[in-house]
Length: 488
Image (cartoon, rainbow, N blue to C red; front, side):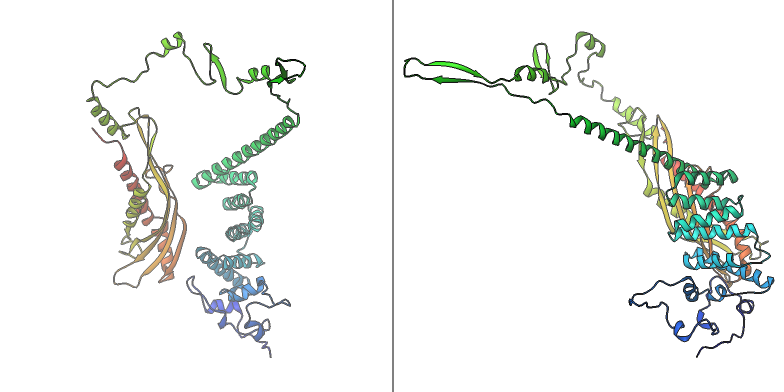
């Protein structure tokens, strides 16, 4: 027997039970409705007639989601719709941060399905479509990601991320020229964005490489056709000249007579003509290799004496070593031409140690005075570093990206917050003091929701971020000092 009552609406449940990002409400606490029978609730998937497992539909996925309480909500008033949109946004951001792509997809689709909400205008819809495009791209649904990004651009053509997401989805679909156009529009809207600038340059290079490869394919096809036409013409047959002597005897004559039998061939002349083609030539009356080069008197005078000579004063080698050490090159490269040394292992280790030393104490004027933000762990660091010497000048080449976990805590206090962030571009394009961009800033746990503005102000946008930038700049200075030219 199905139960056909519901005591509270889902929007009322949201009002009575406000949810945090780190807390999931299980669907077991929902009241029964007419939508589900006990049999439906006990089965996650349905078995079809062929006894195979059928893929769950979107409604079934929503039913199994830990966010079911908000996904099934149908608010009537504008106030309830505003609260629902805010909750969906908050959960969507948390799902993206946790890489729960299916949950994020369902939450942003629910945002777009709410009609008649006062806070959902074109700009808000553009944000929802853009976030949905990001999620679809991460799930490998590149065409759906492109459609979502196109919808975002249509809602708000001035939204930078919408064009960015459109470019990323087109790159995934290998539609490079369209992707370059979308990324270029995003760069025009935000010219100071270094990440966008690099994406445009990379996409432009891919477009040029694709055009070059297509030209090579066309040239190869033309060469194959030419080769085929040339091989279709029969080559003249070469015949070999042979001369034999045959002895004949006759019963009527006592002596032996010999006569030459010559086959009717023209080999002799043809062989002589083909000798240069086979790699032979005649020099000073002698047949020698085609690559033999005999210098005349004029050429010898121009070149001079090139015979090896004995070094009369070996002590000059010490000066050579001294000059090489001063330039930072090996003793074999006294000319100061290009020489590069891989120092990736040292750079990775020293950069990790420098980042782990990052610590910032919140000032007394903050809501949490004397609280300390520190780097708890460098979870991932990738890249390479090398030192190159070009014409006596040292160049420092490095490009790294890192992910780290941070922690906000205070002694003798229950304050405890953790999170993570990514720095995608630690390279020579960032000048000292300019600062490094932070991406994917995530709050994993927070002891009190009132601390979120404090985290935004002193961890994400200032204080800790500035200290982290200073530590990375110090590493760059250490790198240049360690591998720079040494004084004599």
